[in-house]
Image (cartoon, rainbow, N blue to C red; front, side, top):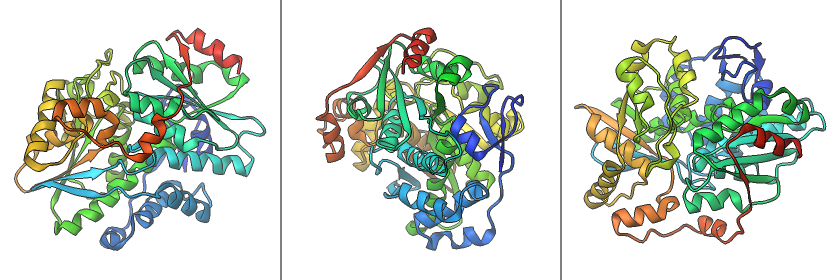
Length: 437
């Protein structure tokens, strides 16, 4: 499989180059040249298959030309050492729980897959020579912990996690600032968009790239976002266990940088039987406004209760725009939008808990409410519950009047000592730091 840039001015790349480089030379995002449809027999048999077997079939469709069959199976099975179950919340609304991995967030799937795939290329000995691969990742919360823990201790790889000072939850922060080893946390005096800008600028700096080998583990990397399609296929298979057959399924994805919904859309192009999609936003409503107006107008991000979605210029919009031939009509006919204020998010969390007993985190609350507001008669909605509510314990407890139990895995992170490097949002400062490494 060859990969091209969304900006159309970079040479074609194979999978290895796309993964190791992360971003194309023209600052565009890599896209697969073709998306192959999966056969009807696969969808007929899917309900009887395991999550790992479903994922391996999907992975073979994406990556089978570029990765040895047995190695790919090992990568997929090792990545998915946990489940992503469907839970009924109320009639016609189901939660796809994506928080059962090591760091209790949906990004565990993509981060673990990418770490293993990059390790596979390094072991083949033909991607980096003797040079360490340096992974740069910007995080608004969960990406940092998922990537840091996915790559922890992987030989030949060093990870730099850039996060906005004071704008991630204390539990999220301790998941990537306490690890040490091959993980360095960089505390940026700015917002997530500043962190993302530093990462993108680093890839474009010739002097820096001659000094060290760089790649990204944000959802701009094809090895991070494409594997997230696995759990959408599994969700369609598992919903049948609730007696739902051939229903008109609506998938609702809380969206920040739009990598998660982008993976779902790629799945749809492969034949995934989803009728339509909803992108649920917090007050950062750039995509919502695009759907209404046809104009994509990035703006500074706003800090909200659902902090992992505080993105004012979502990178993966470029992929969605490219995927549908830059057609606003095609995009808006398949994807609708929703946007919620902090007050609305809190009210949703309280209402859902009171009426169903289900505890939503602030991001999942956006997805749940978008289905409450947008489902049509006869439709069945699935929303992504993207992180465990305990990762936002202070907020959730204050809103619900509860005392959410912190899972043992999170408690272990909280006992560690914070180690981070303070950094301004000026690229020259960041570059100077990396040039010394």
